[in-house]
Length: 486
Image (cartoon, rainbow, N blue to C red; front, side, top):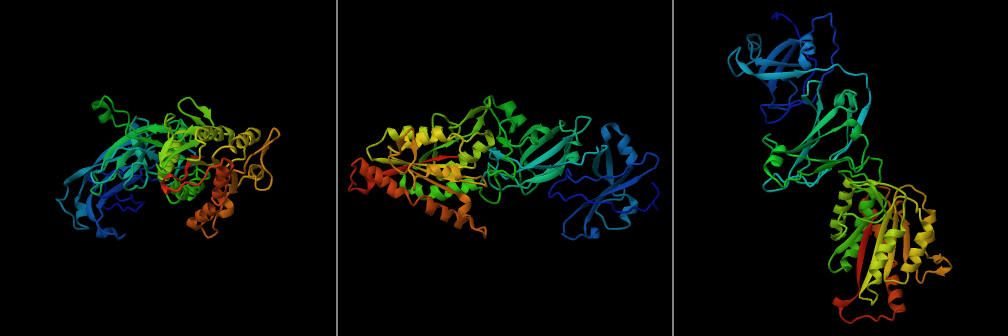
C-alpha cells in the first residue's frame, strides 16, 4: 500500500461506551466494481469528548484492505490486525509503539438485494430475569441477521428501559434488507441484555425468529421464550428467562406506548381508582372477551385476563392493568364482540349474594359494536333484578348508536316482552370526554364523573326494592365489587 495514497472519509460508526470488544450496528453501503481495485482504510479511535473533530480522539490503530478482498472471502468475512503504523503515528500523537499490534477488526459483507421494504416493529417483554442487586433489570434488545456461513451480524439495538422486568420498547423502523437482506424467512436472532454502566452488560437470554413471523404482529404465536442456554443446562426446573412479544401495531387501540396509556387503560384507571375505595379486599375479577387463547387458538368471550381460570382476581387497579397488558402479550384479539357471556358470568356471582351486603359494578370497555344484541338484552333484563350495575365505555371511532339501546335512561331495556326491573346500564363513548389539549388527567376525570354519577341511585333502587335498610355501622355498609372486563 503506497504511503502517498490519499483517502477520503466515507463514514463513521456509532460510539460504543466502555468496551474493548465493540460490535458496531451501523452498516455502510458501497458500490462494488469487479474490474477496479477499491482500496479501503479503517481507523479506530477512542472517543472521550463530544467534539466531532477527529484530532481530539485517541488513535487506537488502523488497517488496510480492498473491497474485493472482503467480497471474495469465504462467507464475506475478513479478519484484520490493527496496527498503529508508522505513517499514522507521524500525524498525531498515539499511545504505543509504531507498528504495534492493537487487536483485530472483523469485516463482513454481503451483496444487497433489491428489496426496498421498510419494517416497523415494536416489542415488549414480560417477567424477565432480575439482574440488578438493588433493582430489577435495565433491559435492551440486540438484533442479529444471519449470514450465509451460519454466523450472525448485529443490525439493530433498542434503547435501554430502566428498572423493569416488563419493558415496552419504542417502535422502530429498519430496512428489511438490513434485517434479512430481503429474505423474509431468514433467521433473525435477538439477544436480551441487562444494561450496566461499565459496559459489561449481563446476558438475560435469546430467541430466534424471522421477519415473516415478526411482521404478523400481535398473536399467540408471536410470543417468544427468552432462553439462557447456561441456565437451562444447569437447572432441571428451568423454564425460561421471560418472554418477548409484539404488543400490536401503533394503529391499534390496544397499542402499548412507552409514553402514555391507551384508551382502554385510561378508562380503567379513571373509573377503577375511584370505585376501588368502596371495596374492602381490593380483589377484582378481571375478564376479557373476544380473543383466541393459547395454545390451540380457542375463541373465548369470557376469559380471565391473568390466565388463571381458577382465580380471576387481580389485586387493585394496578393488578388489573398488569393483567390486561399481560393478556395482550399472550392472546390474539378476535371478533365478534359478544357481551352476554361476561354479563352472565358476573350476574351469576351477584345472584349468590342478594341480601344487600354486597353490590357489584361491571365495567366493560369495548372498541366494537355489539354483535349479540338479542342475547345481551336478555342478560341485562335478568341482571336488573340483581345487585349489579353495568358501565360500558366505548373507545375508538366506531359508531356506537346501537349501544344506546342498552342505556335505559329514556326507554327501559326489554327482552321477549319483559321490561328490565331497573335501569342498570350506563353507556358512554370515551371520545366525548377527551380533552382537546391532550390533558389525559382531565379526560379521565370527566369520564369518571359522568359514568359513576348514576351508581348511587342504582344501588339505592335495588336496596329499596328488596327492603334493605341502611345499617348503623360504617364497617358493614354495602361494599361494591368492581369486575373489570375488556
